[in-house]
Length: 406
Picture (cartoon, rainbow, N blue to C red):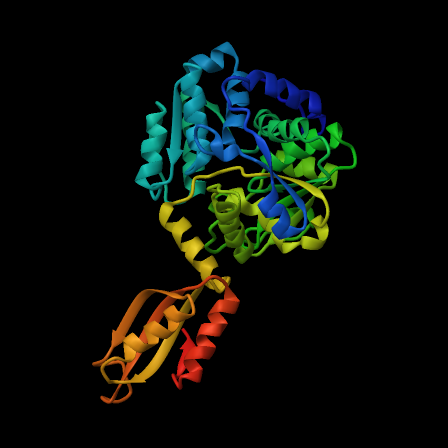
């Protein structure tokens, strides 16, 4: 079927997509979050697409693209390549439409993601060591078997579906001054920018990329793309942005902000603690932009899609613990103390007297200490804030203990 040219995608296309996907995709709430507003100096409004059935916004584009299939395309079935949220989105909406779906995933894909995708009725093909190899194989199968390839972001039908997130945000809160939209391949940003700028002229729409993967920012600046490295925001760790969204964003003059990894971790923790929401790294990137660029958002009503909540439990726990350490709410203390009975008890009592809670002890008497007359002690202590932690350290030093932060 014919797709509109990138420049022709309009608010009307996004509204049409909204009508097509109504009932198949949850119209998720947009909420004002006072806790995050107080912390950032902006008025934060969160679009909760982590509440979608598959935990991410990808359902919007997949549902719209599948609804646009011709009768012949429906009979043949669809194919997609993904190791993440797009896989489950295509699998789910193909199943709801009674269409067969094949999902090609790289061999390294975690078993849980394979199982979840198969749980929506899709046939999963594991192929290749990289996403590029899996994508190439998916295109080969599409040609061989006459399947329609559903691209995660480089498709106007998918982009129009993703734009319904901004449409819903502005229907709920038309007074928004700015949007901060995570960018992987660019489909969500292109769709949301198209809808928002036509619906509310003058609104600022920012894309957000993590510092290791600023591919769209580099493309828009006319720079060579250089990306790579580990990131907690793996959902937007994209090497090659979509040509369709790139052309749209270039035409719209959309600015993309690049945020440090630490800001993404801080945003995940703030969403969990302040908003009581679980967000994956990509889903927290919009808030990370407000944290990294406070001067751009101060005093403004900002719409942020929490576009995914599929974060590994271990990764989430590590992020939360790292943020507690950075905030000074967990202390790691290292002591060199005489090897005498009662020393550990005395230190613990002094910490307790000032309200600290010892949560981990490592007492090395045999091999770590510099002499047999001394011992090394490592403590992890939970405190209310940095001031309380500093008071505990000062009290221990006043009692002649040699203590340093670990």
